[in-house]
Length: 550
Length: 62
Image 1 (cartoon, rainbow over the protein chains, first blue to last red):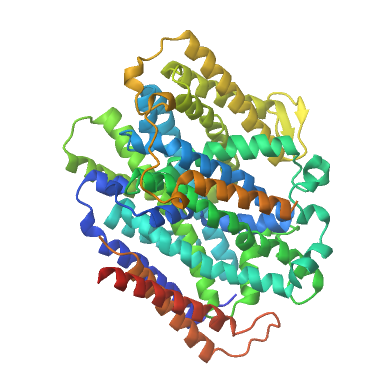
Image 2: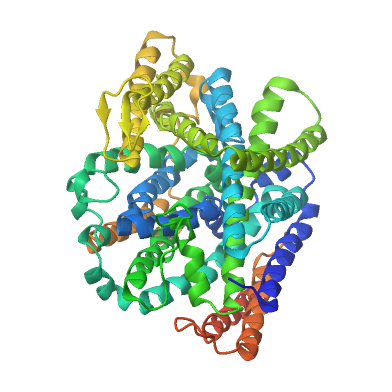
């Protein structure tokens, strides 16, 4: 793939605007809160788009096209069942506690609701995870740009990191969020045309459906048994593991996305941000997954496109998206597509970094190192944490480049840590009897259960480092069941330990637990703008999509 | 506070214009799946979107 001057012009224009937005917002940052949490100033439409964009990293775009080519439309489960219900739940039911409490971050909510040790556990694991996941996605980007464009790994990683550093240092979270809106729109303009062109060239969706095996064009039909679909998953694992544990664990507790909604300028806006975000989210499979599916058909038609190959044999699905661009986009649009990829990478990275610096400053530094410093001290620490976060991400990217296996291991560990979390939050917010000891030991037991499940089961030759008691048809199925085990153990342990330990006085839990918090009045908003009404419409659309692709 | 619609509108207006230029100078590609007209099909909506954003920002200011 060769870039022309006009493609570089598109890239430079994008970099220029991203930096200019950061520069424009530099005056807004006077206090630590303004830098780290945007001082609750963001309008609802901006918070809503940022809620989506921070999650939409380059790895996701590249990975979803790859999964589309590998698994077909079933990949859409990661969007539809795997995101929408959880996004609605966090907006309608959980945001009142996140936004309504005095918490500045998700770990800080755990401090208010439970105790210091639960917060410390969550803050530490979250800080480590954000740094490594932004490092991994940086590594993936560097690798891709090197393979397709021949750019140097170091140059692309360092340039992208420096630009993100510049605009987050200048305008803090506000700058990250504002840029995420621009980046999100650019991703749409850069990727949506590709989906249309690829499907059109493959002969339209009907032709696609007739040329592919049924398992690739249906959502639920092939899920009756693991052997009927290439993912190797069955309905229960899919619904309970992905649709409940993993999805709610991510969208309802991960500070990376919650931070965007918490930056909104009112409770009403904070609740509507995730709910409104479900509508574009539902349509994303058509942009990111469908090109991958079309690529398979195109390759079989002999029209000049073939699936990218790995050096060692087999298909390199991760390159599907870029090779499609190279095939369909002329100079000009190629620059836009590439800028879109850069934009997704930067929005994901800025999301990680701005969540990291806040958790580091408030939940680690202020909680354990220096408690009562003047505000400008924490502003300085927040800025230093931004530099530190980006520096560590770059280091993690190089670590991944040197030791490939480390990445597998880390992703596995992240799964262990994330899976039980939703049980803790669910009980904490909706059962006033839950205690700090219950939450802490529940999390510990849940994480251990995840590790043990992995140690006792095997899939595709992975796991079973203790004993091979059970074999899963795929690592995906294994992941789903590890999540189910972790969540269940955390849920039961939290309840048991809570009942055995002393409850906190109800007075202290006002505003933190459902039964002890005043209902939010429906207020002056028109009926169609209320979170519950919007949520109901979203569910109706979601059901329609699922029936359509049944 | 910065009205985000101004930089977003400006950005897509300019990006759309660059795509129009790319369409004007673009040679007919040798690849049968590629068409230089894609630049127009995306460039024009970008310009329309950019101008609409700028117009909205201007209207709410006055």
